Length: 306
Image (cartoon, rainbow, N blue to C red; front, side):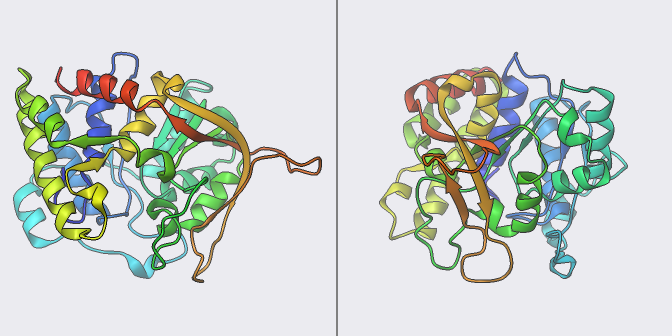
């Protein structure tokens, strides 16, 4: 939760999924993204211990983007020495996704809050995953805006493994995308952090302290962005929230493809809003707007209950 290089919102997404009584959390898989997959796995195990839900399987996933196995990273020594006593569930993330979806046809929603390597691999292993999954909800992409960063023109999760994102878009699965242009609007402030710290739940003090530290870290990291002075975005929790509260977001059908390869536009989502008579068939729905107040009310009530 907020270790340098690992955004705080990933942990909050897991906490929210656990707190929401309308969500049953069956399986957690990890993936290489803004931290290495080994660190992601160890820290996820530490977090579910803090949340009191150790019985949920945590399975390690892809260690690198689908077409770049040479980019595999190892966990830093300090992470291993501190959290290395945790043990993940044996197996492979893509295989476990296949097993769980195929054993429960039409019942499982996959919420992907990192690069889509595990999900694409599962669909390649068993193409019927695409028709047997209830839906796939993804925090990723940017559809009605831009990142405004030339070094990463595509949103991070898609930029890291654009090839897997394109595979999922072409899979035929029912897809909902919650993009950066919408998630940047839902933000925790220092006042929200104080409210969490003052809650009676065991998780609240940890959550509030982590939020304060992450806002401080982001303020230093993004000195030219005024939005990072006193708040931080809850990208991934919004993707979790729309599973049980879809009306928090306004959805639009679209046909989306993604720029792959190592060119300057890697990860950019090419979005067709189906306005012309010759428009392609929609392959997903995208988030176009969000009820900010409604989300924050739901989120804070859920997290402070832990």
